[in-house]
Length: 253
Image 1: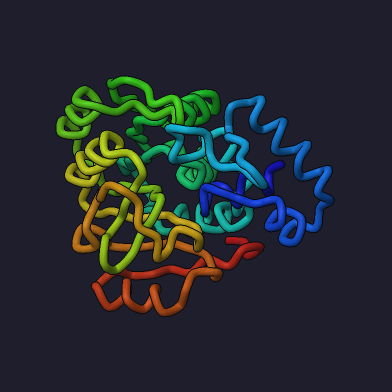
Image 2: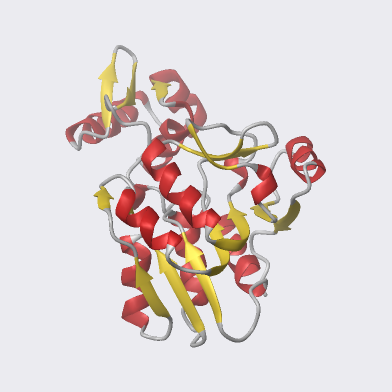
C-alpha cells in the first residue's frame, strides 16, 4: 500500500492498470489495497482506480516517511555536516526530510532548535541534548505543524543562524513552495528571521510547483537534494544564485 500512496502523492489519481503494470501486482491485490485505503479515508474509489480523498491535497506526515527514505537520510547527513561548530540557532520547519535533519543533529549539545513541528520538538526533547524552542499556533493535522499568527510572532522574536526549510516543490521559476498557504506564511516568517536559509528537498520535489510560495530563490543560500534530481532544473536553480549540494544516497559522512 505504501507504493500506492507514493503514486498518489505525486499524481493524485491512479488507475488499476497503472497499479498492476507499474507495481507488478495483481488486479485483485490492487483492489484490496485500494479498499483498505478507502476504509482509512485516505483515498476515494473511482471507476477503475482511486484518487486522494476529497479535500486532501497532501498525505498525512505519518505516511510520508517511507518515501525516498534513504535519499532523505543522505540529505540530512549533508545538512548536518554544513552547520558550524559551537553555539548556533537552527530553525526547522516541519516535514519528513527536516525530521531526518533533526535526527542527524540530536547528538549536538551546543544547538538551539526553534521549530513549529510537534514531531521534531518531541524527537529532540526526548534525546535531551538539543535545546528546543517551540512556537505557538494552531495545529495542522496533516503535518503536525503549528501555524498562524502565534507561530509567526515567535519567529519574529528570535534570531536564527540557519533556517532549514522543507518543501513540496522548488523550481527556478516559482521558488520554494508548499501546498498550504497558512503554512507558507509561517515558514516565510521563519526565513525572515534567519541569516541564511537552506532548503532540504528530495529529488521528487525539484522542478515541482505547489500552491503557495514560502521563499523566493533570492532568500535561499543552498539547496540540498539527492542525485535523482532533474539536472536541467538543478542548473537553472544554480543559475539563480543558489548553491546546490547533491547528496548521494548510501554515502556516509
